Structure formats: C-alpha cells, structure tokens
Image 1 (spheres, one colour):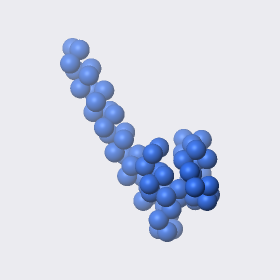
Image 2 (cartoon, rainbow, N blue to C red):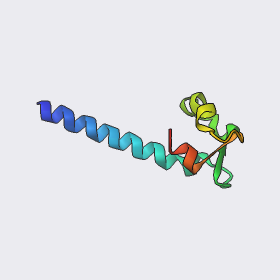
Image 3 (cartoon, rainbow, N blue to C red):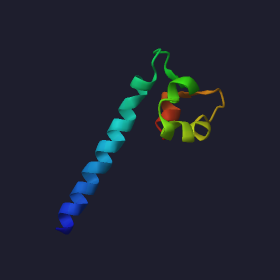
Image 4 (cartoon, rainbow, N blue to C red):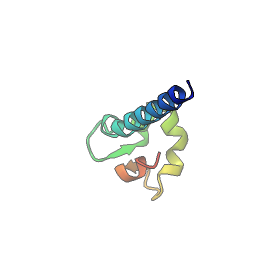
Length: 69
C-alpha cells in the first residue's frame, strides 16, 4: 500500500509539472515568445508569482522565466 501511495504521488507530480510547462504556448496568445501581464491574467496562480518570475522587470515572462514557476 505504501508503494502505491508513492507511485501515485510521483505520477501526480510528473503530470502537473508537464502540464504547467506545456501551458507557455497556450498563454502566449499572440505568439510573440513572451507572456504579458494581460495574457497571464487568465491564471490566478501565475499572476500571484508574476512579479517574482519577471526577473528582468520588463513586464512580461520569457519562456526561461516562466520555466522557473
């Protein structure tokens, strides 16, 4: 039973990480290679981290900055 719980936890973690990473292209609605605050506003979780993730302070997230989420 303990092994089953560990396995399920690993599957959940892997799935959530993969889904989060795949969302960059979905969030980058205009396809300019960055996620603006306007584009990020559809995700409360992303908006709560936006300022911290925007390490260069340009008001948008690059793919590299987003990958740190």
